[in-house]
Image (cartoon, rainbow over all chains, first blue to last red; front, side, top):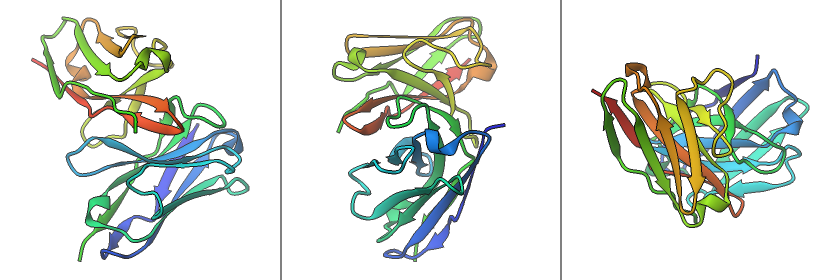
Length: 121
Length: 106
């Protein structure tokens, strides 16, 4: 069974840092692009970042560019999101999602259950 | 950044057909997909590559994409279809989501 399990969320002060992880199983991780998508309380889905199966190509939303870094360890089938300089508006449930191909994400066919990040003093 | 526009809400009576639109510049030249999200749950892919249904998605869900508009159609809408629906496309190395449409079945 294909599964994605996020972890690493929590409460952090403004300006602080947090690293999210997404453990994948049930598919050949290195063959698929992966993405982070967030959802603020009561709001819609917002794409955050993605990277290619090799990790060699990375993509970011303007709202997080320069503050967040996506990476992956294909030997551990794990996706990461390093979040620095966190702001109150980064408060959201963060989902990990599997893309349909190696380099681009026309659609995301598997989603994790999400991990909650709260930025507050 | 690429913008996708959806109506905030759509209402439909049980058994009728619901249509949810998603508009974007030359969207018909890209692949559109649709996700369903119920309260407290993760999104679920219901349509991909404009018209295709993933395994396990009922046949009453269908999609189209032409010109500047993609459309999700739910035929014979059931109470269990009440949810938020999001369109998504890939453009210029970024993922774009629509703002979401709340489908109410009443």
